[in-house]
Image (cartoon, rainbow, N blue to C red; front, side):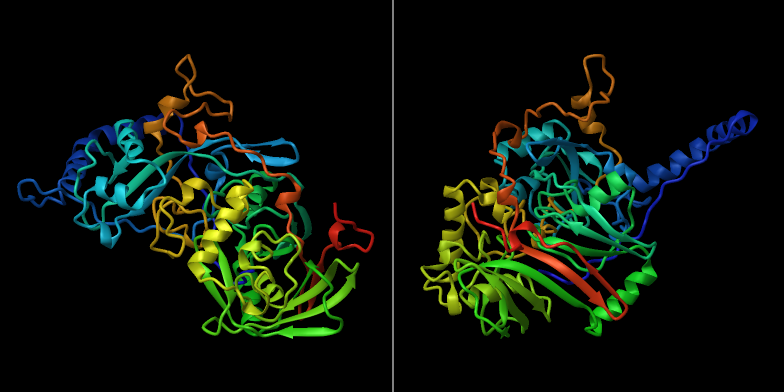
Length: 491
């Protein structure tokens, strides 16, 4: 669980007005008269602001101000559409522009070298072919030769055929919408906001696309596999008030989970510090070097094999409840990470693992690879070229963890309006754009060549649910999930 507040996104709306009759003609004539001067100014900017460049020197436009706080708009929502199959919500594959400014460590290197050493999710031949099709652009111009040397402030854009993993088709229930706060019951398997491989299959996009709710301020987050109460502020003022309550520790959260074994009776407090082992795979553990934490547990019931436990996290560290339960010897019954055999015969009880972090991560990945369930770790085979599981935000490109989404051309910084370079592949036989949201298979896309087994609905649910969110003058709660009820029986 991560309760940190992300950057607030402010709404952006495109508006345009169209003149008619005499006014429109007048504007056109004025534009024609002014065009030569406009062209002259534009040529000066393209030529380096009027300054003469040394022979062979390449002009790089100055970086443009970009607003990372801009919210998603109808233009983004229309990139693709949903369809439902086998209890799953799916997204039709679509074209998308990943973009980034040149990293400092890339300056002086060729684009070919950067693709070879850092963007290994695809073979080098892919990028060569992508350049030939005009999908790789440098400073908005198609790159014809990948041997071009990168310079400071170079702006790189990579158009890809994007596939998203399926999520649960369970509808998202709106609990409260009073104009200031939006409270929803989040189904398990849905990320809160775009990250990694997820964009349209997220809470933010579904609310925007299907409910017309945009410009939402995130108050807190829930893990992708966790369900339950999720709050958004509808206004900046409401967001600031809730932020202050968070800083003043006046917000209380209550979770319910089903854990392995018979949990002790009475109240149990765990204050073990938590350390992030890998941002890439998304794994934490108890460690003296970690950040201070405090979670209060109380057993609600047990059937002798598993127990339903109330959890009250008093701090907000990543995976705090899950890690503390594992340390206590009672991991969440179907936790794909902390109830894994990779932690040893006692599954990490008391912090005893018996292997180093690198060995732990490799064992965890191998276990899920054998079960064909790497998707539960938010990674695929393509996300792990050559290992590098311990690398953080400067690691191998195209990893799926939300924590490292800004590492590379896979960063979630929005899409562009100009996709002329790929539109030709989306045209129908008559040479016009098809209205169908379905996009034909892309000849360069490796995902199009892979048939992945769909996850089952059971695989997309972890037995951890945010039951209640309480403040000084409000309290929001949901119903108990079926797996937390007394009559529930494990399949």
